[in-house]
Structures are given as C-alpha cells and as structure tokens.
Length: 79
Image (cartoon, rainbow, N blue to C red; front, side, top):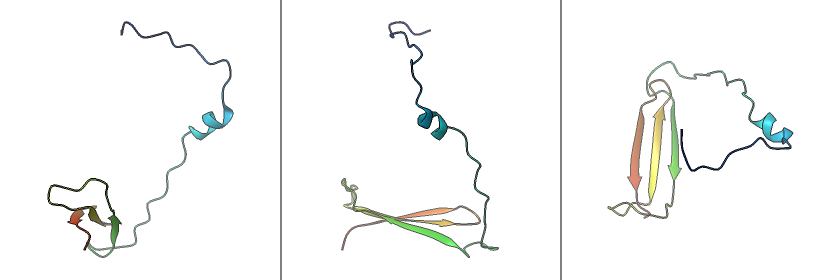
C-alpha cells in the first residue's frame, strides 16, 4: 500500500462517449500480399527531427519486410 496519496473517489457523472471509446474493438484481419521474403517492403521517411544525432543526421528511413518483419533503419542528413 502506498502512503501519502489522496483518496480517489468515484465520479458523480460518467462521460458516455469516453466509456464507449475505451471499449475493445475487433482486430483487423492480417492481409499478407507477399509469398516470399523481400517481395513487399513498407518504407517510411521521418524528419526533419528537432534534435540531430551526434553525426548530424536529422532524418531517418525505415523499411520493414512484410513476411519476416525484419526492419532496417537508415540515418540521413538533409542534403
């Protein structure tokens, strides 16, 4: 038990929208479009980042193989 915290009481009014939005949802069905490794790759470029890396990079590119879920990250700096 934790000592020193204020008591937490039940709210007098519940927000219906908040309660409904927190209800569990059905998951999406997994749709795989590839049959072999490296057949479908998902890529994303992020940047510019506010804080640069020690090497001066402020962008990165991520690539994910759909079948193996292997991920590659490449750091880039603005040219």
